[in-house]
Structure formats: C-alpha cells, structure tokens
Length: 196
Image (tube, rainbow, N blue to C red; front, side):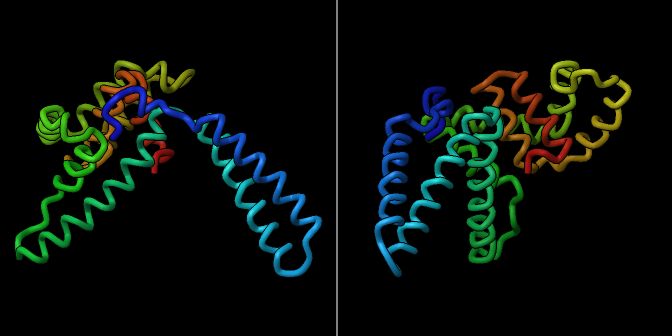
C-alpha cells in the first residue's frame, strides 16, 4: 500500500542495482563466449538488464507526483473495468465516481477509509475549483517566469473538468503525501498535458 511516506518515497535499492549490473557483466561475457542460439539469448537478456538500469535512472529523476500518478492511473483503469462489469452484471448504471474511489482505496489502503471518503466528498463538491485554488496560490512556483495573464485560461480549463476525473482524487493524495505545492505542480503538468 502507498499509505505512508516511506513507501511512497521508496526508490530502487542499490543492492538490486548491483545485482543487475553483475548479471549484465555475466551476460556480456556469455554473449562473447557462447555461439548460436545461446548467444542470442544472452544478448536479449543483457538488453533487458540495460533496459532495467535505464528505467531505474529515469525513476530517480522523476518528480514525486509522477511516480504516484503512474500507479494511480493503472489502478483507475482497473477500477473502470471493475465498475463496467458491475454495471453490466447488475443491470445498473455506470457510476463514474467508483473507479476513482477504488483507485484511492488501493493507493491509501483500508486503514485510510475515512480519508478516502473525505476526498471523494470534497472531489464531488469542489471539482476543478480545487485545481484552480492551488494554481492560484502557487502560480509563480509552478510556472516560473510566466505572466498571471495565462491564469484565466487555465482556470477555465480546470473548471470544465468533470467531477469524476481521477486527477482530482490523485491530487488530493499527492497533497497529503507531498504537500500542496507538489499537488499544484501535478495540476500544472496535467493542464499542460504532461501528466497522461
């Protein structure tokens, strides 16, 4: 579960990276020594190790909101599928808030049920106004050097967001874990279509 800061901020351990580097060296040696199909297998395995290292390096450079956003959107997709099945089996209408609720419960864990219920209520009440309030407060921090003249266009974009948008729930979780400024950075990335 992602309910505490230690888990949220966890990065790949260096011991596992050392293991991947050792495996990469062994695979390169095997690719040089072996012939035929085994050589191809060793090359493919070495390429997979390189991919893992590059992915690890990229993860180290990413902002906190992006690590949470990626996992949350995967959970949201699973929640959409779950809600679609529930609606079809029960011959009931699709509830657009349920995938976000399931996503939040999976991210925060069952021990944070009260927090999840609270953010779901706030999301339905406020919608995109929440984004607007944060961007207004941290505009200079998230858009350094930009003029406040761009703020009305951003506000209009955010007010048009559906109240069931998962980004609203994700932002509240980011705010709890990393603070309001990080949630504002997330909104800015979303508004600029960098959070997909």
